[in-house]
Amino acid sequence: MAEIDSHRNASVRGARLAVIAAPILVFIIFALSWHALVVLFKIPAVILPKPLDVLTSMWTQRWELLRASWVTLQAALLGLAASALIGSVIAVLFSQSRWIRTAFYPYVIFLQTVPIVAIAPLLMIWSGPGLRAVVLVSCIISIFPIISNVTSGLLSIDQNHLDLFRMQEASRWQTLVKLRIPSAIPGLVLGLRVSCGLAVIGAIVGELFVASSGAYDGLGMVMMAKQANLKIADLMGTILASTCLGILLFVAVQFLGSVVLRRWTKDAGFEST
Image (cartoon, rainbow, N blue to C red):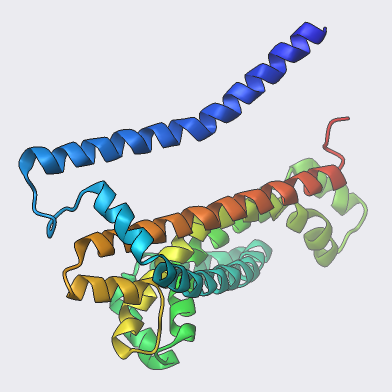
């Protein structure tokens, strides 16, 4: 028995190590291929710098990138929080009325498919060139997965559970609070996992428009400045920093989601003893 447990623990440790080692190995192979491509074809640094030059640039401008990342992170978190709140409210309304869902869901899809670069200048004019405009763009880009997943969770209820609530003469409000909303929590977590990356993208897109006004100081503004000065290594370093920011936010949401789901299953009595 002890030998089986030891083998199982070794397998778990090996799986965890693979989760960490595999992405690192892919990154190393990608960086080496990138370096070989630049050297082999003698690509000028103004077009494609070497990976080491990009990493050196990131280290050189690390404080600037950290300050800009903090500004962008605040906008992305506010946008994600707004999309979670507004999207959940809309999903609840959709779950309570087939007519509302049929009448308004196409407009939710329309909001998702409209090119954000086309309406971002309007949003900046309407809300002013500052944090509010960036948060608004971030919210618009990240709200659709929340609405879609939460609505699905609210509607995907076991018919036996619904029949049980009807037998107990539960009101619509009681059914919503005690059955539909708890059942939609996994959908909300899934929606947040998808939306967190979109929130960062939306914040940077908003910053690209707000940056021209000089009223903002996020990663989008840094990108605009590096592009204008043809500092390609610095620009790619800023892009890599924004990617790391998105990954960091995703990991945070993933961790919080796992905690919420673990607590939810435990409170619901689904956790195995």
